[in-house]
Image (cartoon, rainbow, N blue to C red; front, top):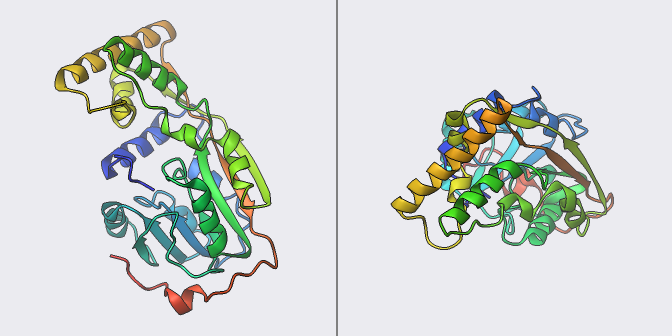
Length: 282
C-alpha cells in the first residue's frame, strides 16, 4: 500500500512526470485497465488505491468500486478529488475486510512491492475474487529507473552512505508473474517499453526529489549530507545532459494478469449483503 513515505504530493508529481516527459505518448493507466475483458457492471476492488489515479479508467467500465489503502490521508484526498461511487476503507492487502467470492476484478497496481507479505496479499486477492474473476497487478521492470538509482547510489557512496535496494525490485515484472502463479494457476504478463526524457537538470532533480533521494540505509541524511548528495547528483545529471542533450531514463513497466479458477467457491457472502457499495470508510 502507500505506507513507504510517499505523500499525496509525491504521487501527484510523479504522475505528472509520466504525462509530461514520456518518450512514448501512451496512456499507461488505460493500457493496464484495458487488459481486463470487461463485460460491464463488474464489482471492482482497488487494493492500494492511493489518490485514485486509476479510478477514472475503472469508471469507463463500471460504477461498482471499492478502494482500500493503509493511508487515511490518501483516501481522504481520493474522496475529495474524485466522485467515487463506493466504499473507501483503511485496510492492508494482507487482510482484506471482505467476504469470499465478492469481486469480479481485483487490481493491485504499483503496490505489491510495498507489501510486507506478497504471497499473503495474493492469497487474499484470490479469496475475495469470484470464480473466473481477474487479478491485475501493474508493476515496473527490473531495469526501470536504473539510471536514476545508479546516479543515486554513486552519489551516496561519495558521501560515505549506502542506498537501499530499489523498492520495485521486490516485485518486478520479470519475476512477479512467478510469484503470482504460486496462488493463481493461470497467469500472463505484458510489457510496455517507455522512457523519461529529462530536458534539463532542474526537471530531473524535481523527479529525483520526489522519491529516490529518501532511499538511504540507516538514519536520515543530515542537512550537510543532503546538501552534498544533491550537489553530487546534480553534477552527474548535468554531465549526462551535456553529453546526450537529454537524460534518458528507462521507465519500462507492465501488467500481470491472472484468473481465479472457475468452480472454485469459498464459503461466504457477497458484497451487497456484507459491505454495501454506498458504505463510506471515512
